[in-house]
Image (tube, rainbow over all chains, first blue to last red):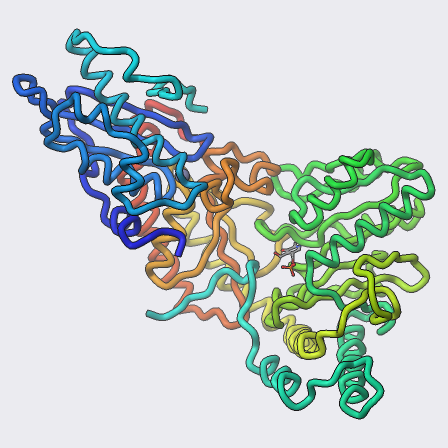
Length: 145
Length: 396
Ligand SMILES: Cc1ncc(COP(=O)(O)O)c(C=O)c1O
Ligand SMILES: [Zn+2]
């Protein structure tokens, strides 16, 4: 088997698919050239600073779809600050592992979450620690060819 | 769940007749074809019968047939021998095409690293090399021209007869990887002026791990696998009698029914093209007419091939794609890029390759499933949404 049952489950039945019309933050990462694009929408409860709702759309392989799906599950209902701590390693672990050459797809899931949160911060004039968006993070900046 | 096998360019199911012909060699007739005793002699006879049968199907001489472990070995052997000979004569130029199988490309690249000059002929949007390009590329130091008969991903057929004629006139060795062609279209070695030709049994309902390198009488070839004196002292290793007999039966079957099989496959393949071309923003990859009768290859905009393959697999349908994620690298197939597809479109490709065992019901079901799954994957593709909203321009 290329993917384990958990990955296949998230690939076959992706959670939180779609878009949020009045989203508070939107992030898009990846590009069509490398074969994966993830777009994530978040709705934030601004009093409690909690991610109320999250939706995603993904163009990409099975692991790209599965990692975006599980990432949305992992951050839904969580404080925004906590979502920022989501690492690609945690995503892969939650899925019970991915083939080595598919790990790059999981990086995109982490980056999509960060891109959405960054967008939310920017739109709301919230100060944030730039360190948290470390190098390698390329939310929406990469050219889509 | 019923298996619908549409990955026959990858490998084929072994024909029942082939299996039957092979079975005795696993228990009763296990002799080594080089042994002098009766079991060995019997194995030898069967091996030579197989060689003669294969030669007859290809219209060549039995002594022009060398058994190998498959298409990859035949390609490696032919190219390596030709380059070594070229090197001795001070000829260090190879001409090939941009979309050869990796068995050819990676062997050629080895010699490129060792100082050979390599011309990769373009294959254009239709996936066919131009004879003029070959003519222009040939020089006095060309050691080898190696061009495939039919491409393994898009099935496009190359002008082998013309290429062979030009090489013959110039006195340049010509090798042809005919792994996808033999057993599927007519390959007549009296008509085709090729010096060497690679064949693989598992592509025409024979067993895996056995193939042939045809080498025309009078042309030189240097050993590649060294050891014993098997295969006219050119290819060492105890003969795979079961495999060789299986290949001969498979080829005989394929050649006997070539026309009917072609018509059957082509009719069903054309149905796939006609129906799946109705999917908006899709394209046929490679020349629609000049291609193997069993090869279908299309791209669907806004989706990535791996998801399509996995969901088709959930429905029992075996297919393949040239997307990056299915190739195990970050780049989509070099074949699709060579015919000018941009990455996005190459990622969304689907290859279906039929066989004589494919039925109309299977094709009807596949058409339905591909349409359903493409629509589903597009429903949550941000790329597709951007195309639809006009944020990005459709690319196909
Ligand atoms: C065009 C072509 N050449 C060579 C090969 C390699 O053949 P084999 O699998 O027998 O080594 C293949 C099969 O994948 C092929 O399609
Ligand atoms: Zn991927």
